[in-house]
Image 1 (tube, rainbow, N blue to C red):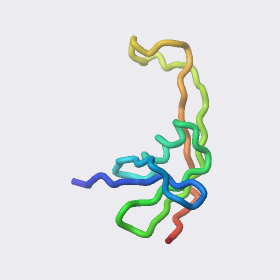
Image 2 (tube, helix red, strand yellow; image 1 turned 90 degrees about the horizontal axis):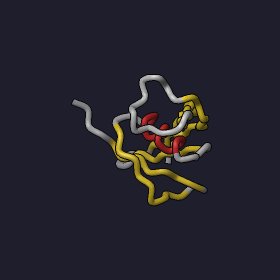
Image 3 (cartoon, rainbow, N blue to C red; image 1 turned 135 degrees about the horizontal axis):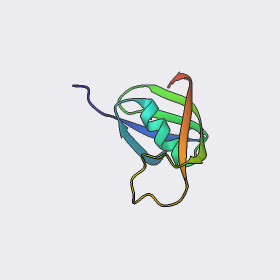
Image 4 (tube, rainbow, N blue to C red; image 1 turned 120 degrees about the vertical axis):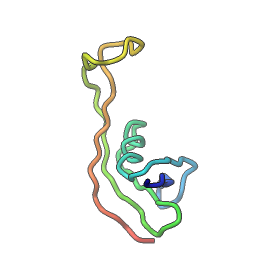
Length: 88
């Protein structure tokens, strides 16, 4: 079974206090994009890799299968595209 990894959000070339805990870097990037980040750099802890993504979030109509507690008519949907991997 694959272990989850820690991804640290980087801004201006430095680590921030925001850490995402996921199996894949794309999952962490989607979380960052959902919080409004557009230029996303995630440093993978324990390696020299920095995953680089472009992200956006859009308001879309609420799906018919949405749970009853979800109020409103629109929800935020994140989308990311991978630019590449940088090495430190």
